Image (cartoon, one colour):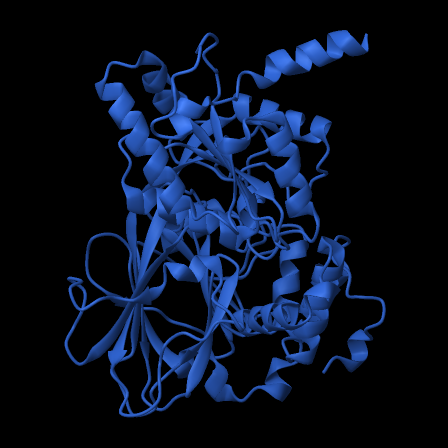
Length: 487
């Protein structure tokens, strides 16, 4: 029986294995024999998930050709993909049908947090490959919004052989779905003194590698200004939520031994939310930290004219959302009812419609409303482009976050030209399971609201927010924190 199971497992694994001569230029052509139905390149952040990343890396290398499994701590994905695809193109020109099949069927697997996944997505976009491969994501981070949005779950996986084989089976059966990707540009006058470069939590996260100052030769460069550019796939946020995330990442970098599993990470995150004042923003944060005081915001619905975005004065955090998965799998936009769709020209949150959902939050209690049935944030707009024009002297810094990775952004106090602009860039291919939360506007199975829901965007009273929080069985403040003494 054991021998039969081993043979069956070996036969199954052959569907994914890529031979050396495809991976390493100049290697002798091996006896190709069986063409893999689902050839994969696997990228693992061995530092993610505590010990899990390293264990998962080893399991994949034991099962597959070790040369098709890459540790992102040692090999950057852009270099790997350039090498593999250049070799595939060369072999294809030589008439190698096996290479042609690999190129056509190739899929990527990335195991890590949302920042790691975003890093690989960015590389695939930047390389402008002739046959860009679809990507599956293994949830090895804390929030795991990207994997959850496409049905891969949000809990860190087990790393044994059976679990990896089960995941590979899902990859083989997965459907492709296109999602929008977004370009972000930030420009300001060169400060007279000091630096306005983004300040990451102790060291630069992977996803911020793409958010950098442009070179003098870049077409976006403007003389006398500092210009930064980057991209995202899930969300960009500005304000208090990014500040709490920054505190969490800073603490994790200082004391990595305290962040060994997902539950501890989530508990620490909640404690930092309390200590940063996210639950008591009216008391601990002055009005000039509100988004409306910090910046004037404009948006463009489609290709047309800019409109001013009306932001309630209590909003302290704003999220530009591409996928229906934020803060550990929550959907801040929800599904507007038919009346809202008609009155405000709103739609369900499709991931391939060229629109971002712009959502505001007042504080953490407001965010907890997402756990209640039909709960959502304050729907502000849907936008094809959005522009933040920071007010002169409003603050000397703010906090921003891209796909789970935060940074502190200094702002020159004598400058009234600081601008952050987000625009639609294109689309990338993801792999999704039957549990996919993301919906395509072209999929006839995507939900359209049929009934009127209680989804008011009016300002709720604190007592109403507490009531909705009490109904949220899935969220619990850590046991050692007294909600009545949050500070």
